[in-house]
Length: 586
Image 1 (cartoon, one colour):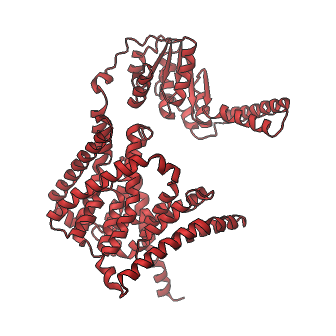
Image 2 (tube, one colour):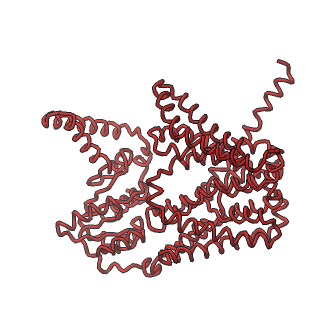
Image 3 (cartoon, one colour):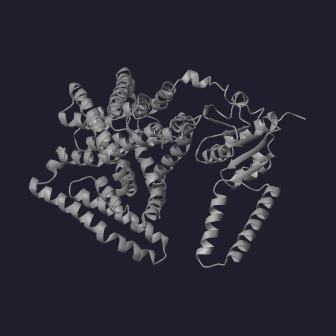
């Protein structure tokens, strides 16, 4: 191999190295500032692209490969959509979700036509802006443990419909594209038959061939073959749809839905996930590379106005729809703001529209910038809505603890705290319960229970709730760091109270063992032991044998626990050895 050939082969590694380096640097940085991975990928693309450092001059050269990330994402979405799950959410999906996409998309398309776009381009632009970001909205709700709340479920229903909507929207781009229309000489009828045949083929293969194929391959015991087969199914379905003139994403989505009930679903998802994450990140980087900073700067005022207009319009429209379909105003406001941004699928749709000749590159760049900045503003908008929507915000934050006279204090009223509180109440114990989640307080109030609003990690709240007079303090919060902070406060400030703590796992129990708590328990340990006990009995083991085995298991587990505690070799050991920030110096 000549020197020039070596140099040429060496240069082939520059592009992936640039992508990986940009992603590794930008994504953690943006996540640290609560801006999300999508913004990080886009910023990385801007930085390395032709309008930034010019490390890569041709975004189109990587966009084709990057689009496979979208294909794999649609496959995984399909895998999650079990018919039973769809049926349970059918009203919100078909009613609330579809109404949101149609209403928002229609109004935004009208505005786009007034701005000078063709009717096809306006429809695609309006539909793209009507979609929200699952990658942004779901974590924002999840960070507050509100995905299971009424507004969280309704917001997720809209996101689910939007994820489904991208499939027909991409198909619409393919049908309207003048590029596709002039690429061949086949008649419209023949093209339609090709599309029907392609969809039918995927459905038949998914229903009758894929499960037996995966069953046969699983017997080989070669995990890499299962990974190869999963990729073959996704890319094969995508290629078949592409040949028929439909979107690759639609084929992958159909394959996923058809395998949603398969017993191989979880393995398929695990095999696809690493490729999906990397290729989807690559897609966002490629989109970022196409953002013309000069164009954005020269149209900064217009883009900012479009961002604010988009977020206000979507919030107002979704708020009105939510109220009309049964949500209270607080939930409606939170749904509206958490879905007020443009979504990651808008990038997919706009890129496809540019490739298909439906949108001009300049229009797509401006729309992409609008979506990007709307993503960046979403956390602030949602935080404001949370503050406004908190019922009696000022009253709650200055909550009246005059009735908090219990000799037992339960901090956290989740699934664990609820059981503890009910047991204590059955005994007639006077219990004071505090929680910072408004939904939990409202739910408890419907059953006649009094929950005080308050953040248990704040010393003033603990004192106001009567921790100084309590005989027993039960820490039942989900967050391990918050639990440890409460433990440190209680150990120093309320040393006379018995302190009992819920532990998420073994590592947290090891940390708590060094904090001198009176009792701690791993939340899943006892239930798992009980199930193991019943499993032995179900297999025919005598009661005495089961008892001896369980006793031996507990003894061995305790020995391992004590050994780990003495050696300090476990995740979080530094917390145990670190002096508490709340412990007075000796």
